[in-house]
Image: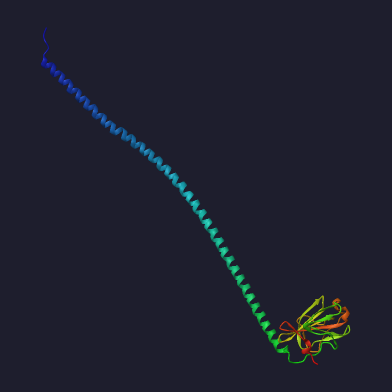
Length: 269
């Protein structure tokens, strides 16, 4: 048998190896090219598709956001408008209140000025007209005897009360219905009822001097009325219960700066 040629066998094997290497190289190159084009193209398409979806989604979201922002802005504008209106109303009401308070203050100040002027005028009139100074003798309010004298330093006896006490005026005896006259020019400053002295009338005659008439009735003047010396003020009334045994009389009291003084020191002798 003929033996195979070794050189030919080696050459054949080498050719196969080279051919296999070339095939492997071609396949490798093809796979590399296919791998670059396929995934990149696929990824690109996916990215483009996703981009379009994202873009579409973003577009829709922009529309929603824009609409929401517009509604929010409109709501804020409405709230600002209402707030401005409330502030305007509050400011207007505050201005009205301040104006009203200012008018009230002005009115009160005017009234105070008028009252002050009136008081000044009245004081001037009193000083001018009712100017008794304690030096001139006064007209007797009722012609009669003194049945209970003035006594602030010692006590005197009260018949009805059956006790001794001080007396801040004098009791002039008379008859029911006797006329009681003003001792000087003056103004009626008080008319009141007393349990002890019955109906009582007080006159201001000037320079802090006042005179009071008690146990009277049929008073002819009211508070604020002016009288002249000798005018009939009232008549003698029935005595109050505390003086029933003393009989009808006039209680006559005189004060200077609010303190009682002895009327007989000022009446004509």
